[in-house]
Length: 147
Ligand SMILES: [Zn+2]
Ligand SMILES: [Zn+2]
Image 1: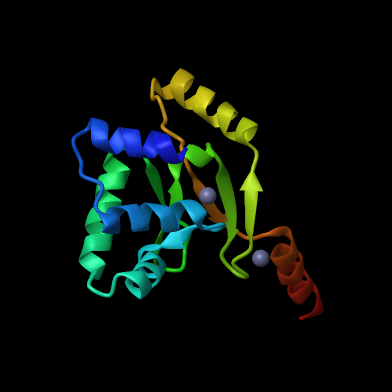
Image 2: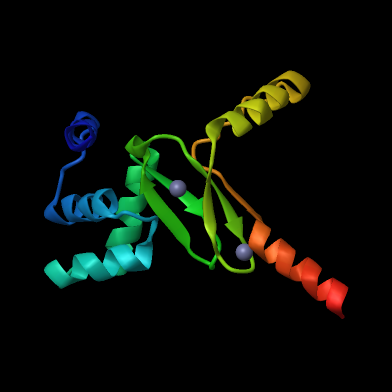
């Protein structure tokens, strides 16, 4: 993965500055989806001269090269993921913030339907679906019954 990323950057004529390397590294080693602010705070600890706009510019570049995916997972911040970690999707509870991974086969059906009915080829790399998790739904229903 790491080497692919480096090849991809140099192939397209981008210099791999220490800052870019560091930003990539932070995204790739992060277990969870990471926000630009979180990337920044990790990078600035090592490179105090880096500013947040460098992080945003680098994220734009990595997105354009298809190395990083950007997803709105709620909470008012976009979050980043290495694209090489494969396709995956999430169900996000708007009440408790719980994140459940979604099986790709569910979306394969959606993709097929969109193609068949709308002639639309959906690019479902990393999708977030918002709603209520089972636990929160049950709690809400319970409240309705007791009130
Ligand atoms: Zn994800
Ligand atoms: Zn919930």
